[in-house]
Image: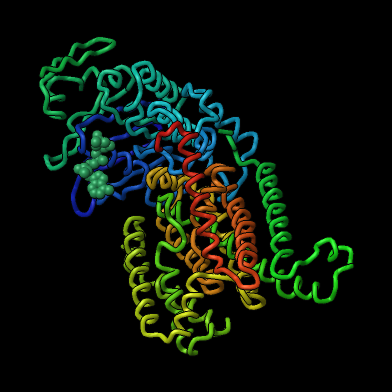
Length: 260
Length: 340
Ligand SMILES: Nc1ncnc2c1ncn2[C@@H]1O[C@H](COP(=O)(O)OP(=O)(O)OP(=O)(O)O)[C@@H](O)[C@H]1O
Ligand SMILES: [Mg+2]
């Protein structure tokens, strides 16, 4: 079996002595779409940071493309891992096309000009997220959902074997939520390893190969459950993860019915 | 908005236009003053010997100094705005000018009132700047990382401290000294020639190139620290480099001309309005805009009350403040009144 693109092994991580993730092990293989779910503040973003090599785990190891993340320099990491972060928009006026072109940074010398190939890649990425017509718009004036799609396009333009998306659908309408999950599914089918953090349990259950449910910090190991949606999307897991009462209707498009 | 990818052709276009702008502004600035100098006469060789002397020995070096200071302050402003993630940041915000002014003022008092020669004043000013830089750096750095908000607070505190110290010195100074101090803290280019020019000829291009090399990293930083790091930027090292580099550049400007306000704030915004926020083009554009603006402001300072001179800082503020407000209003209108 080929080694997983992302392998997190026995990891503990946190901030300034406060442990957020404890004893976490998971993998994401080429061709796999892995959904990460959990309550606010449970450490999903922290997991993404660990996977991107931005937060050093205090225990355990992270391997990307078979190499220990600690031994890869930033640039090499950026070539292997594309990150769609949760942080906001730009400070200064910048067009959507320029924003997407920034994804080429790890592949070019520090100061480089954009060539035809870069422009083609950026425009293709914009088209893939259905944002081709936004190319000339100032990113600061885009709607939240438009901006999110442009930033996803940048992550696509960045390339790399592993794509990490931190809540890529949080500002999107119903159509574009489905569109993003369809796109992530396609990217995974095309051979990338894709990890997506989301609060959309139902869409994640439809699109993802596996789901990882995280526990809030302080209650033991980080994982509540990890496995195929049909196996792990259960009322018990939802209760342990979110502390809610819910029924789950199984099927090709599972439905989570919450009770107030 | 244009999509504005930074192709080689666009970069070259901006550089050429910028250079043209600087040349025209410099020629204009060098031709005016208390004595009129006929530019055409200089070109055709009809100009008189005194005209030549005024133009080549006095005006041209002074214009060159003003241009380099203007360009340097504009680039420093661009870098500080990106570094502090604050569009209102300017090179003097972090105490560099306060420290430099204090140093220079001490040297003024030490020689009893005359503004001392560059050889005495500049090292004092530079020492003051570097002291301020060191204080801010020490206060704001945590395990080698400079946090923007801490940097800002440390800088503002340092500036306030040095300005208070300066006020104490001025309060105790004689009227003649006080007059010289006042002149200096308003900034100006009177009598700035050879040595000043040499210092700037080294510092300004060097630091500008350093900032330019980091231009795309600045674009990324504008999107947020997480994004920048995810795309391979060592944010901590970038912040250290930018802070120290642009502070040294600012220090050179302050040592040469005193603190000249507003250039480092408005020129970056003006340049952004024309070429957009992408730093690979913005840095050279801002340099050229600053290098065109300050010699013209200096010429105006020489003309308004000729044969006396206004401090150039007065001109930059009087011209700059309304221009800045107009620019902001224009930007607001363009955005449909929505703050981004
Ligand atoms: N830079 C930081 N310094 C200190 N604590 C942090 C930092 N970032 C996050 N935390 C804390 O770590 C915990 C996990 O945060 P994280 O951002 O990983 O949550 P999350 O699962 O992504 O939440 P959300 O669904 O709201 O995005 C939270 O309690 C948060 O307050
Ligand atoms: Mg999060």
